[in-house]
Length: 386
Image 1 (cartoon, rainbow, N blue to C red):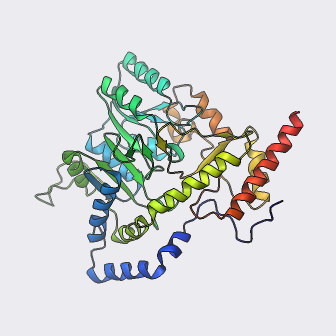
Image 2: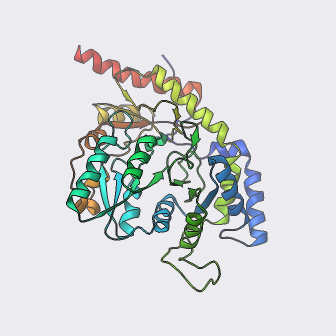
């Protein structure tokens, strides 16, 4: 029997990276910002734009204030408006659907694949056909969400989009650092939005986000829209509707430092996930990662018929866990009027998913304890069933 670890176990770990890099480096970066005084979109954010684009393998990256800003800015750049239909996963955080709604577009919720938990291809085709048959909305954009860090089936989604004259905005808010068929997140879809919220694989010390594209025209529109639609020639002529979506220089400095250890942390996350894959009981359903793909493992999530009981058991043994997400977006109060389609897999996932500790810095002792306790719970359920 594995003893309870001496150090507390965290569901997320937002502190250890700072120790690995060294607190003094962060303080030195902050002092540099205080000295040059460019607090919004300063040299740190411009350097970050270049390094993030290089990491993703895209021509352009524009940092912004949050993942929600990134989604909204990308849609603004495409001129999404009332009368447009935006097809979006429902088993996700609300921001994925919030962005099109803020622009007056209509979210069309799509069910999930029961194995990958990502957007279901067959249901996406059905949803598009339904909208076309109704004739009231123009199919405009597909927003597939790389849930928990695992890439969607982009070959199929991009094919469907092309056949229907639509764009694909990859919601990679949980998946920056993932890889799809040799391409890094950011370089797969027409545009990509990501988040640097502290609990993300590459997390800042506050909100932050970025938009990736290979189109100079799209990138210029994103940069304009993040500053109220400002003209590049006349800063007091706002040529389009926009918003305040700038990244501050302090977040840029933090992310530059954290990017220096990001590749190593991704490897560590992958190793944690492989141990879970190999050692957790078959009683649990495990998220399927598509062939020739690698997840960023923002979260490690299993399914369990006795989810609530499992969570109570884990917490009583000092193991933090969470239900992401306990309600699909289409069932939430603000989105009730768009709850027009049956999404049975989303509904089931919301009642069975459980995310367990996933950080690059889990120790062998901590992992052994987590796995042992989870397997103890599974064994007790299987013995009762027998």
